[in-house]
Length: 192
Length: 103
Image 1 (cartoon, each protein chain N blue to C red):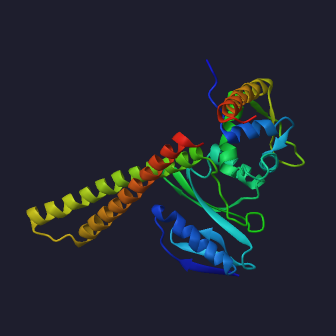
Image 2 (image 1 turned 90 degrees about the vertical axis):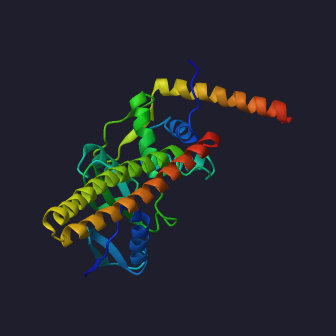
């Protein structure tokens, strides 16, 4: 039987989302499909699966990603579903908990961890620019309408606030990602 | 040009591929060779295998229709690289032992 839940997670909340999905799996609800807002779970025995969300460059249908998914499958890690965004995709994978009792770890060396953080940081920079431009565009509409026509553009004001809020949140997440990259690079100077 | 050091993961992957192995087999073999110390993660292994194939140090064998798992094996140039790395590591160990008063 399927049960649906509605929740919002942003790109910088990947770990939080993953923790929630794994908590659901512990209670016998295993993710079957994820949408932008809706998550469908099927009832399974508790703790049957362990989940890992991954953020990849390119669409889920690209040759490189299809090859990667096939490789993961050979490792017992299966793609459950994915969400495509411009230039990237957010992939939900799972494996049997008995095969991965300590959780699914995809990167065991520093270089791979740095590359992963770089993909994430790159997308966050794109989001910062996009939301900033969208926010400025809406703000200019609000200002022009107020000055020229004396009109109060409620919808544009709301859009401006949303865009700037997303921009700030993306900026904070990007700073964190770059700090992680810096930390990993320092570590690499001493260790592999 | 002197060869730069191989990462531990790459060294063990190449060492494991003296005979054809698929991804999961490599992970198990590396763990066994290192007495459980080195545990390769799937994403890291995938990236390393692709880089090694690009460099021509390992070959990806034609897919076996029965297992549907891709197998890899070391090439002659891979073996040469591995031997050079072994000699570099021997130098490290010899110097370490000499200066620290080991064997």
